[in-house]
Image 1 (cartoon, rainbow, N blue to C red):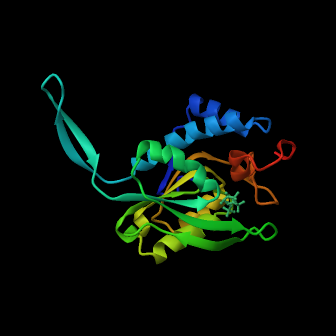
Image 2 (image 1 turned 30 degrees about the vertical axis):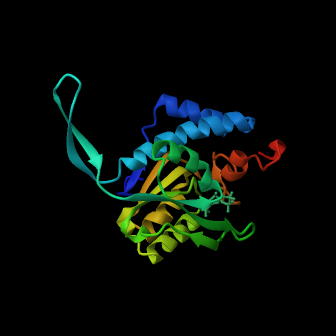
Image 3 (image 1 turned 60 degrees about the vertical axis):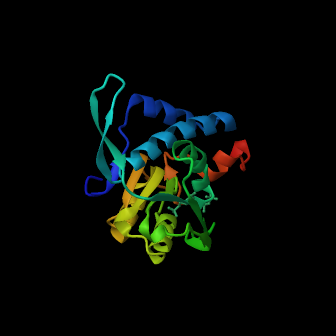
Length: 220
Ligand code: PRP
């Protein structure tokens, strides 16, 4: 994966693995799945914000000393790929309460696994913004690439897109990197492979279904 110049894998700490251990467990209850997913999402979003441009900004501390700080210098908005990407919105609003959030509805065909674009509604002025693209799952990478194409068509610069991704298959990362090499990808785990159903292994199942509680627990 070192060939992927714009890949930012979260530090694989024991704490992160402990969080993943909870959400990977097929027997995780909905409340536990949501809680622990959100803790990982928070780490991903903080890492995503680190990819934005900064400028130097000094402040005076309570003891009268100068702290040589930084602050973001650009407009940033987010776009969630419905439905799973919406799971990241609550954490994002905790970090940036006033952020504009667009939507792109893409669903994979159940049989062919190919993405189909149904709808998009993007914030005004997005062409001049940096965009956090919220898409937790990168399996074949088809959905993420389709979403990136929507952003490019709206005038967003490829290098201004930061894909916030919970888990990724090597196949998906390669597909995004090949089609859109300047997109930055922030991910918390790289999986071993895709199986014959285009699900990641070891994987997490259908993230959207598990996060929103729309699957019967026996099928997880
Ligand atoms: C899942 C997932 C991603 C996509 C990843 O969405 O949430 O959007 O598949 O697969 P890909 O990289 O092979 O395109 P799905 O269409 O199942 O909809 P959902 O978000 O409602 O679960």
